[in-house]
Length: 179
Image (cartoon, rainbow, N blue to C red):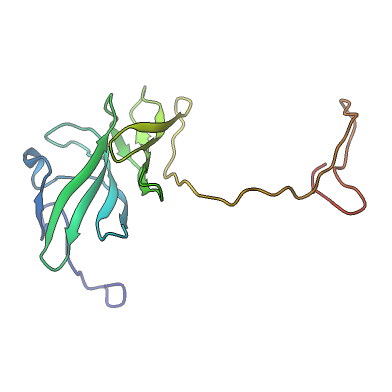
C-alpha cells in the first residue's frame, strides 16, 4: 500500500502467496529471478522481464506474461519469449507490450560475448526487429513510442557548403536553430 507502506501481497520467491501455474515446476518457488519492469496490462495480466538468474531449468532470460488474479491469489504463465540462442542477463532489462500486440524486450546487462540488445517479437514469437550494441555497451531499459509524423520546423536550402565555413539555417521567417 503506497499510503501506509503495508505489504499487500507477495508474488514469487520463498514468501509467495500465489498459486503459479503454467511455468516450469523445476524452478519452484523461483519461477522468475531478479525481475524488472513489471507492468499491469489492460487485460489485467502482468508483463515483466525475468533475468532468470541461476534458475534450476537454466539461466535463460525472458519476457513473461502472467494471467493474474489478486483476489484468488492465482497466476498462470500465458506467454513467454526466450531468445535463441539463449541470453543470460544478470541485471537490468525490460519488456513493453506495444499497441500492435508485439513485445519489445531490452535484454539488459548480458554476459560477455552476447551483443543482442533489443528484440521486438510478435505474440507468435516471430522476431520483427532486433538491434545489437557494440561489445561492452548495455541498455537499462528500452521503450518504443508512436510519435506523430514529424513536421519540419522550416525548409531552408543551402546550395554552397564548404568546409570551414559557418552557415546559419534560417531566413527572414524561419529559424531552425541549426548552424
